[in-house]
Length: 215
Image (cartoon, rainbow, N blue to C red; front, top):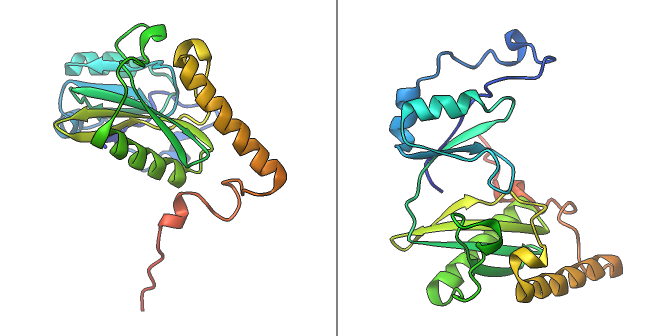
């Protein structure tokens, strides 16, 4: 993971009383310490979302403040900017099947999936392993997991996408049929009772947490 800081909302819903619900927050924020941890440039983005909506690459404190001041009620995170050398987006189905595809978020939407340059070798294997671990911990039956690759290290950039884009015109035809086949198998396995949905049996992140008993 890149260095990441969760920021308080710029604004809150009217029903939230700051004197009751937000007493643990201190203002003004220590922006110097926050930026000292993430570095600049950094990425300011919502903690959940998709389609690169409301994502800002900020190169100065002034740019950070300006972007934060327009975030409204979104919960934003400030994240270390990874100047990546390669980028992989993994389509994940059923917490088991993973298809890594080269991806370039800088390109127009329709051109981001680079199917002409398949992910192979160690990068393929590591992307599959890490994406599978994340989706199993989250309990997501479908997800997309994005890794920025720098100096042989995979940084998980975006992985909270439980309703990802599976349109054939964007993920491309061959990938679309891969998704269709595995989603069909998954739905049938649930219908026939040969597989268990992730919300049963505590198959989510808390199964990775071991309780410690203090004598």
